Image (cartoon, rainbow, N blue to C red; front, side, top):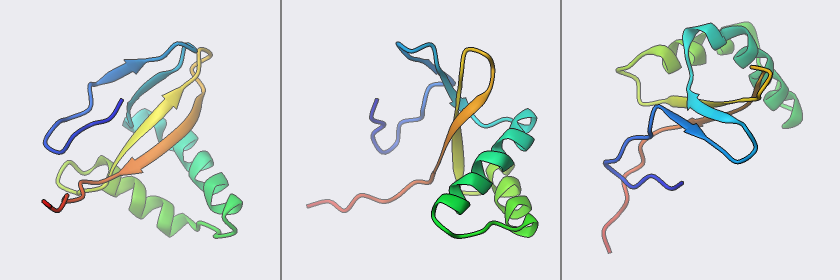
Length: 92
């Protein structure tokens, strides 16, 4: 699903493989931290606690441009994440 500028993502997207994709919620904090640390390790960029706290607070701040969605498996495990922000599209 592509979201055009000015559109918002639906609150929940259900997929063919029984995943649920939704906006991040405060209850996701610990699982998000684990995945975000693994992301940093994969790219050989360690993530310290200060960065974790800062990014998490940005994600929960409705006034901050950074947003996140998470993928939830059938067993309720958080198995994926994506951070995004609005990006102006130049008119050609």
